[in-house]
Length: 344
Ligand SMILES: NC(=O)c1ccc[n+]([C@@H]2O[C@H](COP(=O)([O-])OP(=O)(O)OC[C@H]3O[C@@H](n4cnc5c(N)ncnc54)[C@H](OP(=O)(O)O)[C@@H]3O)[C@@H](O)[C@H]2O)c1
Image 1 (cartoon, protein in one colour):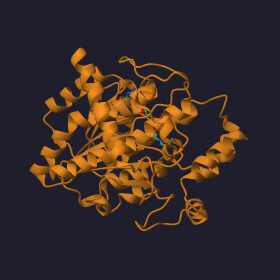
Image 2 (cartoon, protein in one colour; image 1 turned 180 degrees about the vertical axis):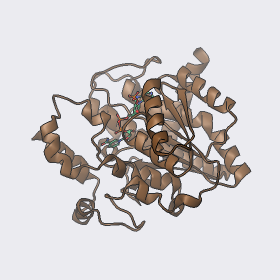
Image 3 (tube, protein in one colour; image 1 turned 90 degrees about the horizontal axis):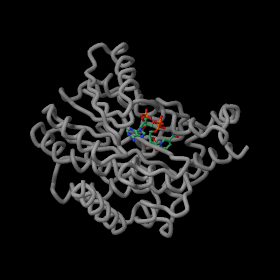
């Protein structure tokens, strides 16, 4: 029963009012022409005349929402780079996509997003290929049930979801700006966040405590990392705008989808309860739609520093919208990562 309440709370809490709830449940389209029931294929249907030679990096593409995002982008002719820690799983995803689209170009490179050294190695290997980079989807996600620490000695959920994607974006941003300048095609970065970011208040958003918490709460750690994903997008959007560069960055909530991130929670979330709750959940293809909409659809061209839910712009929490907090977080994160990289 508590699962139903949890799923209901997560699904409904992203809807500000009764109208929003009805819209979600009925799949009524918003301003964009799409809604909660739109699939990734539907929101990219018109994208058959995309510029040639588009390249996208999709993290976390070995399962769930990321795998579907990679499949649909590949279907639209985008070259896909899959950074993966499990190369066998990545090879299986590649095989599945190429079975459906034999011409799809898929490149697999190793990465562990919880390790700064691994991210640096991935970026060097990718940049060495000399490919353009138009789209970066920061999608990989971890929900660590127990307190675990990364190789760099930071709490694992925060390290994977936020610190890892922060460094990845930093190391690839110049390439994206260069590609956009050379091709005239706008670069797009998508940070996959979650509506759960709204559960975090300022008292629970202390940088040092998120890195090394004294009292660990798995849901809180996950929510903090997802809040940081939005603040990261907002701050980088501001910096890119200041540079007048042709790259956008936005954050999305994909919806609640029964993927690996939820399936891991056996014992608490049982299959039978999920069956009942499934009416409130999205399919994986519906879960990948907001990411694909923001990454590819012409309607989101030029939009940056925004937050999207169900393929429409939406409101995020007050803290997520706080520019000075976002800047402070960016400064602290950058200093931390660079100090750690220098030490290694
Ligand atoms: N599902 C939902 O209801 C929901 C709701 C809101 C937001 N989200 C967000 O959506 C995104 C995708 O999640 P999902 O639901 O599709 O979950 P998923 O099926 O569990 O996929 C997570 C992906 O992240 C990868 N990953 C995890 N740790 C990694 C690491 N250290 N290095 C490299 N890759 C790593 C996983 O790789 P492996 O295959 O190696 O494990 C997997 O490919 C996440 O950011 C999640 O927070 C999901």
